[in-house]
Image 1: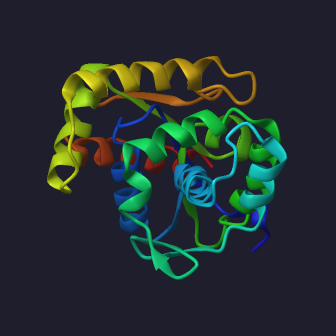
Image 2: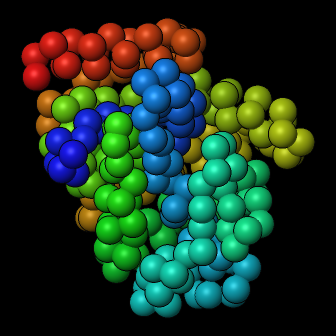
Length: 224
């Protein structure tokens, strides 16, 4: 099967909108591969923080990203065989990832890596520019969002549940700042892709969101 004919579902959206959970469940339901593109930026951020790489050294960061010894095994994310699934979810890592994601050279270094995740029988890719930049011709593109308050509440519960400390006021501030950075960066700003279906999950459960995405995909398949 030529790569261009392998179906792709892109699910883009801001931090803590629930896109990762929805994308994983949709992929599992369809038997598709799953790409958490944000994890690649978080892995680069974690590597930079650990190695002391300057966050304004664009070329050093791109070199780091291009040689990431990372693998995805089920729901586990490994960095040089170390399970860093939880480590990359720390707020410091997330904020660092948001900042370095604005660097064009770094984004280019990760571009080809992301394309290689497109494998039969299909792919569900979540991130911020999956539908606008990486897979612009995907048959189904979804832009999933939620209010800042709803996202802060979800992130708070997520962090507390995993044993991290969290402060609601700080989370609201961080999310607002991260949204602004993602939406206003000059390279691949966060926005709905052309032809994307918009899904506001502020008052939806994850199951309801998954059902909606699967219904849209079924409709798209009928039209193909």
